[in-house]
Image (cartoon, rainbow, N blue to C red; front, side, top):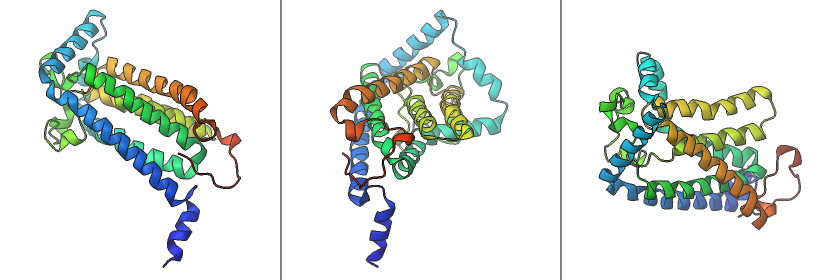
Length: 264
């Protein structure tokens, strides 16, 4: 039996100790992220006001297209069900699976991408705490439908749902931020054109998902992409310079085949 753990360890890029370290880092950051995001929960009146401000801004710029987009797709119930499923799973389930895949099969790129995710979550907290915002689904009077509650039989405001959905943390859209970081990283590590095309389509698909389910405004989607780009710049700049061997971006063509190293 003792041979089984050692055999599994040989399949891990840097052994069980490093894998455990990465899990602890991600869990610790997520706990801080969830606690900080939860601060917005106690700001319902302010969040509703900010949501009204976002809608007013979009109307003033003639870009309040979310209700019309929903009306176009609502008759296709199967598409809405797909959108609901992706919305409920894309932010964390897909992100965790992607990071695990990256860690196991593109390990040299993992540490840089992990840093991007950590920076993005920290930047998002600034928006959640400083500008708590109610999502479009809380404004049915403006022609918006909460598709998750109506079609997926999930009460978005229930205690269980709030584990996965924060009702007043619409700005920025971390679904879109995570999707852009996943898509961009997937394109960078892929070698085949069709694989690159699939990864490149992921951020666009999730942008559609968050709008058609009335969980984000287009402004949230845009700000989510800005958060992702800022996180890339910080990870590639300050963090990569701090620990270039561990945290710098190394594309697939520059991967090393030398002895194992322990990363932080």
